[in-house]
Length: 57
Image 1 (cartoon, rainbow, N blue to C red):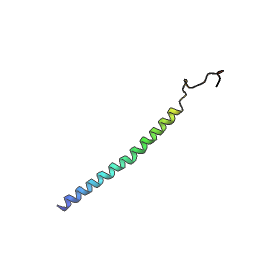
Image 2: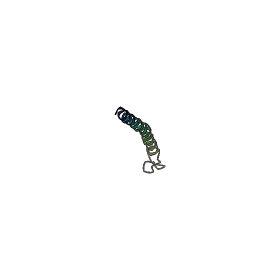
Image 3: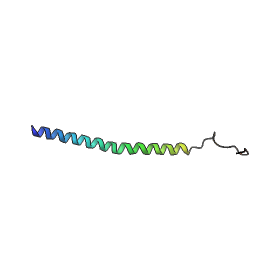
Image 4: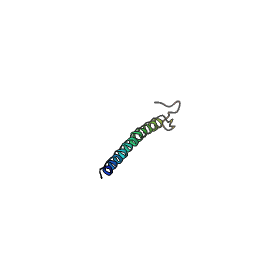
């Protein structure tokens, strides 16, 4: 009986470890993707915002 409880506890600990490990990889990846997308969005050359030559500021 004790070995079944120990095995179950070990299984739960392993499951929690690998779940946290997956979050350790997924969350920073998501943050980096959002940061890269925001830099890309800001650096777009938007023709609407460009001033035409000869116009007053």
